[in-house]
Image (tube, rainbow, N blue to C red; front, side):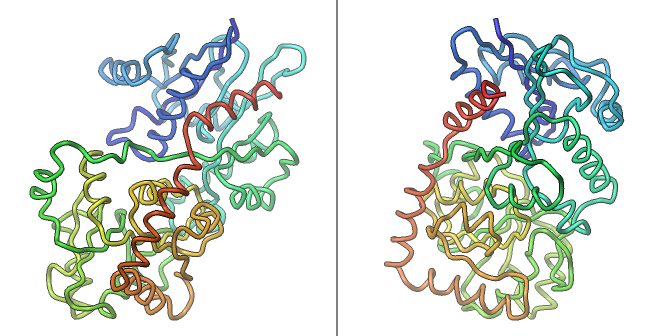
Length: 383
């Protein structure tokens, strides 16, 4: 029996972030698409029994769940310095750079390690991340350069950037992700929309702690330019921000600084998956001014929902949307006006919005977890 061991520590984070969703959805399909004679096991850091159970329940068919004696923090330090190996031998797949990268013998022992690099923010926009996070990513990339048998990138744009950062040669393989969750509307859609107090028409965006309206900010999520675009849109236009708390003081201060009434922009906080589907489907347009060039999972989720998208012209997002969305320069001078113009075109042209919705659904169909899993199996077979 050939065993593929997947590092699933990101599934333990609560609430589960995009890396955890990626790891869970990919592993589920790796199990479902395993070739004859192959099976999937998982490895996680020391945690609690309820968290172990959550991983096991989320991955039916998982052959075994190996639990480290070290918690995430200790395991991170150990792997950063090349200590601690996984139990057993054979194939290891890491959905991130969090992996036991050390010297091994692929040719004689059959050991192989594949890691995944979702973005290059630690190099392109280091001010957007804590200094410790930047140092860890750079250190692990050096280990990947020395010891990884292959590196998965989510897009050709990220693969090109990796080529400028490290000497990886032909070890990089582009394997795209897909929607992080089921975007179909739940049966209680109306009740959820009423509870969330959704406006009749609104722009939807995602936020993060520490966002800024200062255009000189190096934030990877350019909510600054989007917020400055809001006064340039009709006064009836409302912006909803998922991930920003309803009582966020900075949001209130930003609205006051921009001369906007309370309520022009409103935080929804962290919301449930089913609420996310409802909020996305009801949005008139999804604004994604991010400049961090990863895969852009929320962008795929918007496309899959048939919601028109206005996104940054970062190469990875242009590659992802393939003209199904509207790309805008969100970083240089004049960005707020360009964003406002693009949003207003969608908000005022119903034919354009409808056409973008159909194009988005069609484009989202190009991404699937089954396809990604089959490519991962093929990658390990090639090695």
